[in-house]
Image (cartoon, rainbow, N blue to C red; front, side, top):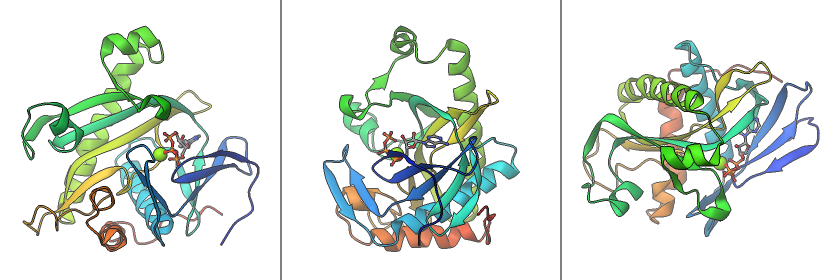
Length: 250
Ligand SMILES: Nc1ncnc2c1ncn2[C@@H]1O[C@H](COP(=O)(O)OP(=O)(O)OP(=O)(O)O)[C@@H](O)[C@H]1O
Ligand SMILES: [Mg+2]
């Protein structure tokens, strides 16, 4: 199903962004494309767009209830979300509660080490450069984010983590780590933008001890574990319990 929309503004790996009915809004279409390793690995996964749209909508509503500002306005159709148009800050904010993935490849920190407080890293959002890790000095040198904004980004991201950890725990999921994109809207407010889904979070099933079976996120695709859509479906089923009917905004 497609819905009325304006011009295509941007086509990314996982979503298309269209002009919305109002200048302040854009429409996000969630695609079934799955990519990993900076798009070197690609596949089409039936139903991924719908599941990520639904999961993201629920998680944005959970954040909103806790007073965390997000770009989310509502759902327009199964794979379509209406959001506030923002200027995306060209930085990917990664929060890690448990060490895994690139942190363990790049440092001697052992897989599964709990990280308290959560480790927050910023990466420069540029696929052609491979999204490199930014030090504070490099951030200042690039001039993309002021030191004051750097503080606000960190506070917002840690608040998101503080809401999502217990939310996921309640539904039997461990929030291992996640990536956020933040943006600034027309009123100058800093908001959580983009998506929050198993494409952008690592989620482990707390009731399962097997190191591979417990994975319910994009690592199933990265590592060729199979059952990717089934895992996303399980996350959706559990997340929806907290938000059975996401706001309609068509
Ligand atoms: N509210 C918003 N307003 C404007 N742009 C947005 C908003 N939310 C997300 N975006 C941008 O839309 C794009 C979403 O597409 P997608 O996630 O498919 O991109 P991508 O291929 O992952 O590339 P990128 O590395 O830019 O995220 C991203 O560039 C994201 O920063
Ligand atoms: Mg993206």
